[in-house]
Amino acid sequence: MAIENKSTVAYVGTDAVAEAMRQINPDVVAAYPITPQTAIVETFSTMAANGLVDTEMVNVESEHSAMSATIGASASGSRAMTCTSSQGLGLMWETLYIASGLRLPIVMPNVNRALSAPINIHCDHSDSMGARDSGWIQLFSENAQEAYDNTIQAIKIAENSNVYLPVMVLLDGFIISHAIERMELLEDNKVKDFVGEVNTPYSLLDPNNPVTVGSFDGLYGYYFEFKKQQEEAMKNSFSVIKEVGEDFGKLSGRSYEFFETEYMEDAEFGFLVLGSAAGTVRHHVKCLRENGIPAGMIKLRTYRPFPGKELVEATSHLKALAVMDRSDTFAGGMGGPVFMDLRSAYYDYDKKPLMTNYIYGLGGRDLSVELVQQATEEMQDIVRNGEVKQTVNYLGLKE
Image (cartoon, rainbow, N blue to C red; front, top):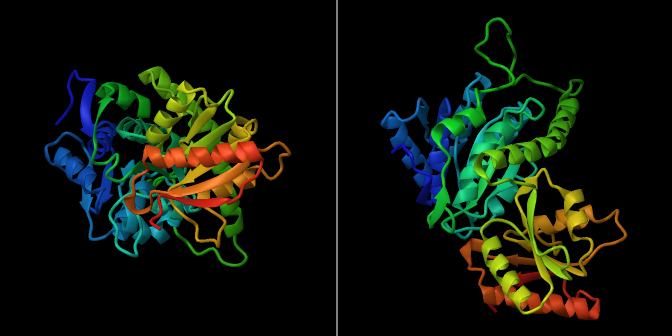
């Protein structure tokens, strides 16, 4: 139901996202349920059925159809959204590229869940990491509050005329989606004013400005140039993400950057982490500091575009850096995707920390404080000896 004169609530992550969608009031939502995203669609559908939004709900028979309908709606000039998880994102695969290639400002929360096989319904980041090069902006969330905040900001980022790219908002399956948390909501009118009127690049339904969408562009066409324009739009999004994060801070008191730092200024070694694991690592780093151990942490929020230069500047003073990945690349021992990206970003710099990669939590396996302590002791050994004995490590793997 609608929130009236209430700012502090206890919500699960799926309700936090559904509430953000209610306040955004998109023109069209086309969706298909898949665990653990289902509750977003269920809750938002109830809101639509009860007349709390003006949204046209489109119930489809698969995630491929969900994204296809969302693309059609967005191309018509509507503010269009959908949601998904795991295999559902995989089933959207070919249409993800169509959404970004057509420069459609679609916003899609993706509740992170492992990809089969074997079948697993719990959290890791392999679904969204599989789509990291599909031309979508990706914003990771640590908790329900950030999932709510990121969903609202995503509209303004996607619809900025210097960007016009789709945005995924990522939240960890069950850990965030189904755990109840205290969080702050904005008032409806503030969200309405913040996101503003829909701003899409063109409309198929505008007879005065006819456009062609989805035409063939063969060997002698401009496909190459279109792809370069997508890359330019992704570069443009750096400044837009930053500006929107600052503007959101003025509205809510919660500013957003590409990443957050904890105790990094004088740290000797640090952890870089995404999503809900940041809470565990932050707690452990705080305990280390209370015991005089110079540890630090970076929580990466913006994964695409990848803020490589900024991350290098924030970590180059470290003696050692552990990159925590909740997915693998199966590249033959190269490590997880975040590790590979950051290691690449460091290539042109002389001053760099010794880097190691921890792949953890696949299929929902818990990241305990004890496991972070294990990584800490290995990091301290790297600092002492100036040597990385094993670059890629699997934290919490059953022996």
